[in-house]
Image (cartoon, rainbow, N blue to C red; front, side, top):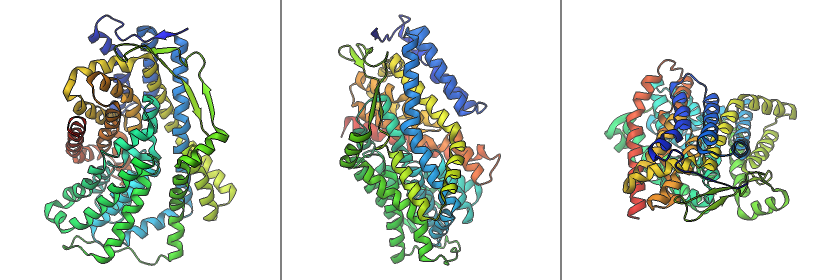
Length: 530
């Protein structure tokens, strides 16, 4: 039986808003306490959201349960499917020694610490953000910087600052795929909008890094290389996000940035003496090519997988669309959120063959064979990866389930109507909402799931572009990545800086606030000037 959403169950917008906040406050509070694991905090938030939906808003319990199941399924596929297979690929490169060769080959490109920092923390870190995300680049780049002689606190903080501009396109576009799932906005439109926000900061971050590391004088000494690194990342980031989609933005941009900077350093040398010893240049060319082969193959296969022609053909022979019974078309959004009652669809799109995760799995299997892995070894690596990722899969599924219950129950609309009172300044505060979500959940994906629907609803109420504000949630969120508990703990662990998490947070906090403010100002300009 059809059910219309209710946006003021208590007859008081203030009370209704405060009650609607309970699941989000509970989730973020448990995460901020650092005493509850992320997956159990997500489950607690999910249970609270179901409780509010059923007992406060009046949503039928069966509908709430179906919405949660649909969200959890979306968390496993395509999001969990991407994460699982890219970590499997990474595991194979580690076991075969290919990753260690990558580490050494980057260290050979320059002996200048400043440029090693940009190459590793910014360009190479962006590559792993694009390939895996979920704090993987912070762990890898911080450990590599330690190996090159950086101090633990320095390596941790600088890796966190560098891992910002690529985050919205991390894990092969996972944050935007999740954002599309909860907002039902066009994925390519979201990708393009974020691609008009973050390239400005992609140019800025290399300069910001060296300013933090060595000050203004040392930054001026290497400014040509910093400009090359930033522009050679920002331009592909803009073009790929606008004309292809979110999947390969970071991976391809990072490869172009590393290659362009490496070529530039063959013909240009910096002034100053901020140098570190070169790593031994004893890597045979064949060994280096073999180490880079899996990631080059990933670029080629995923670029092909994402082309509209191949994707449409794969969908035509494999896609399975599942209409969720008892939910599809039975929940209606109501005025004033929409002009007229609008039924909400609930169809799960199981595109198992055209999904990006399937392309990554094909890459991993081909790469494993080319690196000499035996089938039994690959099977063990896959099982080991799956075992390690189970808590992450539970967290993602619970987060997505919470987001879907929030959307179908109308909780996001209640909060959105409240945020609409910020009026003209909403683009600024909406951007900071994304920042807050990532700072407390540790994930741009989770922040998009939590607040994506709210951004769209509020944008409609305020009269700004919903796609702009959904994108701003993700773009603002990337600047909160450096201060979330998960990233700080990962950075501290990778650099053996145990017990120094507070010092790392103090090192990066002011930079997080400053960069988030600049993003918010840029979004305001996009909303009202451009």
